[in-house]
Amino acid sequence: MGYSIASVRLGSQDVSKGITVGKSDIANVVITLDTPQELAAIKGKISGLAPSRYASTRVEMKGPVTIIGSMQTNIREDGTFEFPAVTPGSYSLSLTGVPEFSPITLNLDSTDAVNISVVVPAR
Image 1: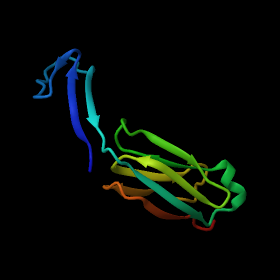
Image 2 (image 1 turned 30 degrees about the vertical axis):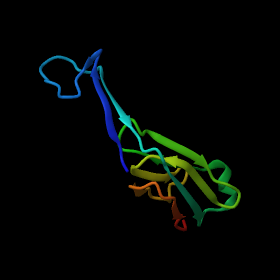
Image 3 (image 1 turned 90 degrees about the horizontal axis):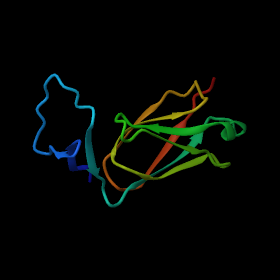
């Protein structure tokens, strides 16, 4: 259900069988990944955060690898949020502008929808 390597190139050269690393720069290595055909949706509900803060707060998910980067979404008026298409991996979920909330880790390893509850502790 995870990623697979589609190709590895060093400039125009196919190096999918391996790279010899010496003293030279290999900054132009490009690794292309195939992602699963179906992606999971992450849906959640925020509790413990005043509804007046929803408009100025975003839910952010960051992956540990730069190809994943980060994703952000708004919180709806009813306190819910959704990331409709998420690739498998490990993510850190945080709330922007909410220092009283510590990021939580999500490990996504399937294409099933994930429902989470995000509880902001009282100040």
